[in-house]
Length: 262
Image (cartoon, rainbow, N blue to C red; front, side):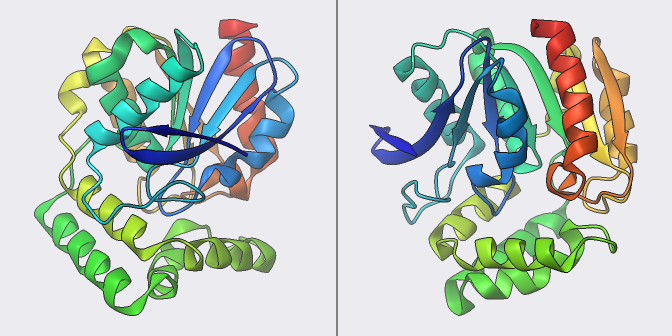
């Protein structure tokens, strides 16, 4: 694990392999380690850059709202620090929200997109209230309380006990300030639906067949407005499709990347 200081923040990241650069953006409320299965199969032919986003993992967790614009600016500066002029951006869930912001504000950095288990639309009024409720819960009762609420929604019913225990441990170890900051930032993110027709790079949309948070209907809605895109459905997976069915996820991801960049 390496680290740099940017935008007043300690940002931890992994940088492995060589070849066309990939930037992997993790889901809430996890960290870059959630991509370990993907890094293992990609680093032999790509340069794989995996940050712990602001508030998560070994990165700093200031006590503030983490706007999607701030995340995007952090990542643009990280790529500049690493002398990366363009990358294929792979974002899952919150990572997808940040990928949309990167396109809006730093699109020259992006030569391809993978949007996994995410949506283009903004939060509903009810969704914003739920995020604030959970932010307050994290601050008052700690991260384990968030794990209790989130876990049933994150993974398919058939997920292994081992995966459930691992996810619970990761969430419980996350800084409550990071959880609260990201929740409040996601609640304030803009609607990216209007940006979809402007995305002029190839896009792969991946979604777990059993994802209840960002279901396959959301993936097909995005595809409708994306000029160069395809949808890959991961059977037997919920919202964390890369962790629940890594072999299937890696197969569709590698096919897309190797065709585009190999």
